[in-house]
Length: 229
Length: 82
Image (cartoon, rainbow over all chains, first blue to last red; front, top):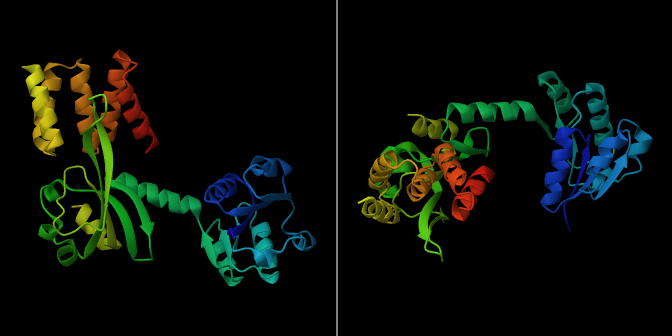
């Protein structure tokens, strides 16, 4: 069975969420009190309702407890956000993920028993700042508070050396779990083109080439230490 | 002479000796800044080396002169999507 999610609040962030979850094949129910916003996601959402989620009777028309997660993206109107989360909790929502405007809002949501609070703008700003500060950084996936998986452009001093030579694990405490590179090849018309190669779980004899992108796994500060020299 | 050097640069690229390929292509590009074949290979090398913005502007330079350059158009499109 497809995973089902409910998104409450179809602003810019909510709309993107509906769009992306639907693209991944999930069934998404979209709720907003503004008809215009609901119309904008009608083609993407599995079901969509014009409804005020702060009204208990309105929420009773939906089986909230059946969703994998309910995501509350309302953050401008803190009162509406809190009321909605409170009602969702009372109606037995399995998992509530709520967008918070600031720390205080987040703390209130925590007290209500919300599973996770998110700050998309803050997280995006932090990511952008890190990207601008480290231009060789493409993508970060935070696995926990201290562990990350990052996509990093290899450093010139690594080129021509094998993973065994570089001893990432013993010397730096990080693991290279994949390498992505572009290599030239000739197409049927005899023209030079580029092909993308991804080496998953590279062996110790794998040689690093100029321009390689390394997928590294490790503690945040150790990864940063290696690539910000 | 120019063709021989370009062949040598290609050989270096295919043997993944990018530093040597870069030296040759930099020289060739400096001496022949409007040669589409040289610009194209220089752009490919820049892309391999993750100098994306430089690669993009070189592909654009080729397309200004030869708008029907299929490979340059494809590479530029791909880079813009990444």
